[in-house]
Length: 331
Image 1: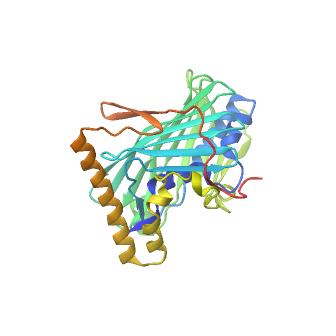
Image 2: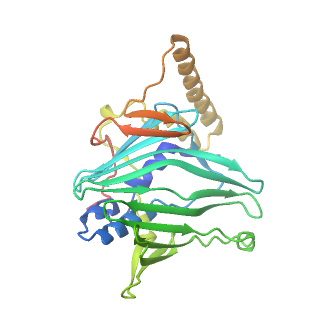
Image 3: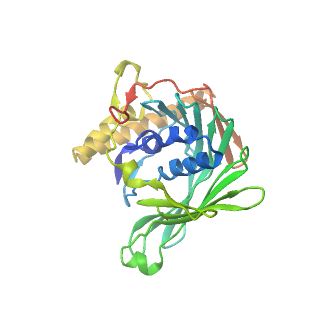
């Protein structure tokens, strides 16, 4: 049931793994505010990837990290809480002076014929050269059990920039009962770009997030490609170790190395034993902290719980270059 990767690796790949244009850098390169928002929308859509039903990544252990560089982009993620599982992410783009922070934790709800997964938390992008902040939320994930098992992205997501008075809204359409029964998943999306204060709509957004998303200028009638999934998701490459001595002991690839090796070799007994050892080590660490009265303190983020929510902020202003890198993915 496990993919040979951690949840942290899955999160990190959404930012550092891409095969086409550096969409994150494009967010700050455009001179016009509307063009910048359109670029932020495209980058946000690039984080939607093909979903595999029935396979789940490892639940990260407390303190686990994932640190990878791809050209000017460097990502650092840390598991800052285990119960509930909370992940904090910090990514920076050195050339374009972009700062991205996430803090999120999944909240599953069982609905009989399906399981609804809500990703709670905050996603914030700062274009520091432009003095702009973009606040983003996320659609929901539905694991449908009947009539045909499958994973679906549904609901609404919004991106808002108070400095430019612009916002984008996208609706991810759920398939009907008959479409699911026939094994179809249309992955369609409809949305808009508008002025926040007046509500004046500037663009219509439409298409399919696994293929092409279009934007129509409502003033001129011009239609353009906003996002091309094929261009972004082809030729993806996994990270490789550039400097083994700098790899942290908490790095996901090290924590789960024997488990992943067992899965890739289809040696299920080895994978099972290795997974139990990782879990037992975590339980022992919890017992030791409880016996000594110590509380867990994240290494790379400050963590504050506010009611049912969590607030995380990185301890360093930029993410340092990583010992794991994507080779040859950027020109």
